Structures are given as structure tokens and as C-alpha cells.
Image 1 (tube, each protein chain N blue to C red):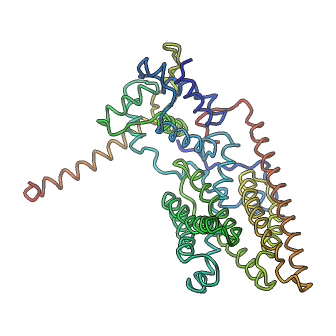
Image 2 (image 1 turned 30 degrees about the horizontal axis):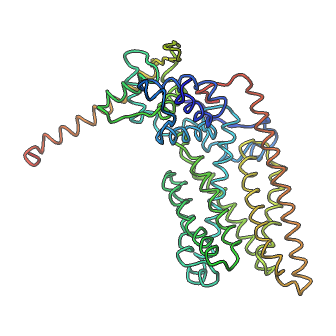
Image 3 (image 1 turned 180 degrees about the vertical axis):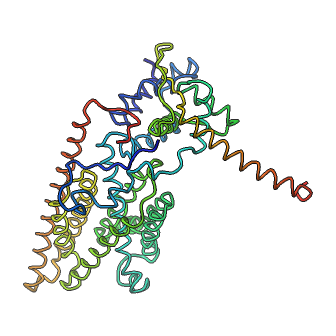
Length: 324
Length: 146
């Protein structure tokens, strides 16, 4: 085996096993045909074009839509659902800025004006996805990262000020953007608007409810984990579908990580620790975070076992080009 | 033939048909129905089908032929070619013909199906009609464009 062939075979390891079993030999032959002997013997690097192309093919096959084994389709469905939910959540979080005016929203936080503006792009990104422009949605979703990224960089360079707010913001914006980029590939048809709008409205309602509860308690970070843990527990009991389990599990994990990051500044100083009520609310928040983390872990375990069950069911039937 | 919408339920649904156990309506219809996908025959797929129209070919030969037929416009990378082949196979527009071994390497040949030939013929007719209309209009206004 030449060095170049070894390089191509290594590159093909990005593809899932079921796809390699079917395609590795013919793809390797295709990569190598037409190369001159000198290149075959001494070349080792497949080249950026093939690397990028293979990464795209890996996303298409691992997060399948329509074709591929049921487990790959379920994983793809879950990632796409997570991207949609995450985008809706980010869009919902920009609603206060729209409602109370951008100037008020910017002046009431440490977030710079440009950062706040970039965050508002989550709304058109969601609209672009629902109206059949996934590429535009991807560009806009990544543009929303400018805000939190600039705040994190600024905080790190200045060596002062808490970065946990910006980090949680970055986490919440970056992961759905990555899921959007990987999950909505060329094989994915247009998202049906009505059901997607219903799901998005649910996310917005949950965010509004969480904001209202935070306002009542006087500390928005406390209400979030409790509410999300309750909603997560509801889905935990009801869900059976592998794709839905994966999607909700991913979102629950991100929300748990976000709440955990939030708890860091809450610990020191404890907000309103002088009052028993605020102390109790903080403890409720910690309990909620623990609940949400448990929900996320159980959902993740159930998703993984559901995917394994699907893989076992498919067994040796593996093959390329199957659609169901 | 386009496939029926696909859902991935790990247990049979029971009871209330609107139950979450069956997945959200969005989840059932979302990304999972090949019938909702964009037209199969984009330019790359068109030239892959055209490359297979006269004889079965294997991967590298399909790429070479597609590039030659498109006067160099369509340069398929290996990964793009297999993305197109996967889709056309799933849509039953092409199928495997035979496997051969040359210089110790696998050559898997693909051939167009009768359905693939129909789709290619329809697409070619559509493009030809478009070209005729454009040509007609250009001839009508030839003084202007001369």
C-alpha cells in the first residue's frame, strides 16, 4: 500500500462504518486512478478539496436524511431538531430587546451595542430556515456568534469582569449553529413551516414563562433550570421516538451546561443572600439544575440505547441508498 | 420512484394518534421524506445520468465523462460523485451493474435504469424547450443585439 493510499484510507475513516463497508474500496480506487506513479509513491496528503468534500460526505451519511440506516437517520433527525429548537430559543431570547427597545436592552447589560445587534440575527436566521433558505440561515446563525465571541475576547484581554454570561451566550448560540451547518445538508428537504412554527412557538412560550418567573423571583438564573427540568421530565416520560430523544437530549444537555455556568457568579456573591426568600430561591435553582442535569443524562442514555436498538434491528441489512 | 415519507419510531405507536409517542407532526414530516426533497436532477446529477446513458461506467470513468460532456464545467470530486450516486441510487434512477478488479483495485460499474432514462429524457426536453424559447426571442430582437 502506497503512502497516498494510506492517506486516503485514513481520510475515509471520517465516514461511518456502514458506509465504508459499502464504498471504501471503490472510493479508494477512484481517488488513486489517474495519478502518476511518482505521486502515488511519494504523495501523502489527499488535498484540501478532497478533505472538505469527505467531511461534507461524513456529515451527510452520519446525519442522514431519507437515505441510510435508521440509526443515522434518527441521529440526523435529532441534530436537526436540536438546531431548530436552539435557533428558536436564541430568537426568543432576543424578544426582550425587540420589545423594550434596543437601546434599553443594551444599556441594561454589559453587552456592547454591536454584540446586541448581532444577537438579533437569530430571528431572521430562524425565518430563513423556515422559508426554505438554509444556507442564509447558516450564515445568519454564525453571525450571531460575533456578539458573545467579542464579549468573551474582550473580557479575556482586559482580565476583568465575569465572562460566564458571555460564555453561556456563546454556548447557546454556537452549538445550534454548528448543528444547523452539519445537519441541514444537501439531502435535507425544506422544513414544513406549520409544525416548525408550532415547535418554535412552544420554545418562545417557555422562554417567556421562564423570564416572567425570573422577574417574580428577582433572579432570572434561578427560574430557568427549574422550568426546563419540569419540561424535560414531561418529554422524558412521553418520548419514544429516537430522533426526538436525541434532539431533546442535546438541548437539555446544553441548557444544563448553561445553568451550571450561570451558577458560578451566583455562588459569589449569592444574590440577595441576606433574605431567606432569595436564599431559598437560589437553593431551588440549584435543585432545578440538578434535576435538569439528571433529565439530560437520562435522555442521553435513552437516546443512545434507542440508536443501538435501531442498529441491531438493521443488523447485516446495511447498505447505501436505502430510504426506509 | 420517490420513497414514502419515513419516520423513525422505535416502538409502535399506541393510543392517541396525536401522542408524542408517535413523534411531533413536524418530526414525522420534517426532513425525512425524500418526496419533499429538491428536484433530483441538478446539473451534476444531469451529467452523471448522461454519462451513463450509453453504457455502464465506474466512478472514475463517470467523473471523466461528466467533465468532458459539460466542456469542463462539471468537475466532480470523489465525495461529490458518491453523494450524487447515493441519491440517484435511492431514487432508483441508476443501479449497480457489475464489479470488476483492475490493477488490484475495485471498479464498480453503474447503469441507468429505465426510470432514470425517462427522467433524463424529460429533463433534456425541458432544457431544450428553454433553449428554444430563448433562441427564438434572441432572433426576434436580433437587430437590437447585433
